[in-house]
Length: 278
Image (cartoon, rainbow, N blue to C red):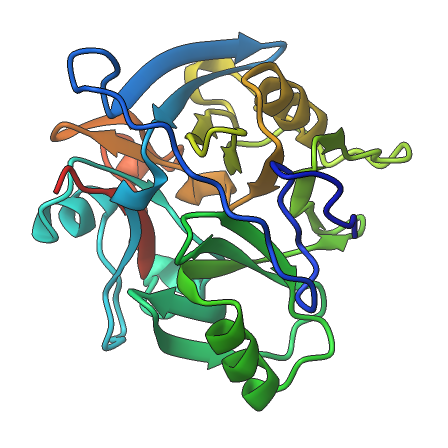
């Protein structure tokens, strides 16, 4: 993991205090809260949502957990948000989506700690609206609770770094402005969801299609890295992808699940990063 080397570089090491990003405040008529950009590459199309004020992003959940989660649009609408994207890794058997895996933090409160898988990372925002990418390797429940408190994590989910022939998950994409070197490891083409942050605090949310939808196979980890770098990300990470990838804005799905039965909505989810105007 990289150390923080400058005033705008985001530190992912738990024991080192992260630098604070102070977003530039601009009048509404000068810069809108949300910008939408279409992106494309060899085998995929996608949408980049730029959120110009990171303080407007939070984590909405279906806590207390039940057997079933909710579709992304339902989660967004229920909390009065204007946009949302699928969040972290979760139990997806039977597309029930009732419970997340790893660590879930919403509005500074830990809602779930489920450890046991290797390669888990916390991905989310602290009280300074800084995107944090923190390894949970070797932590037990009490260590996680201490870290969340000391690092002042306000909203976060988990995803897994696990590279094998069966399951290629790459969490870290860009750290402190440095693109990840994949060392020849290909994660294949799939629908993807990723999140990043620029120097000024603006947040980049990227969702791509794949798995045959629109005739596309999908994006690779390298594709995500290049797109995030092109849009100026200083730090970026994968969120849950595949059939879960979905993006919702102004009561409409900009990117929908690749699963046939959810082609105009999303899989059932327990968590989603949402954007609120107020």
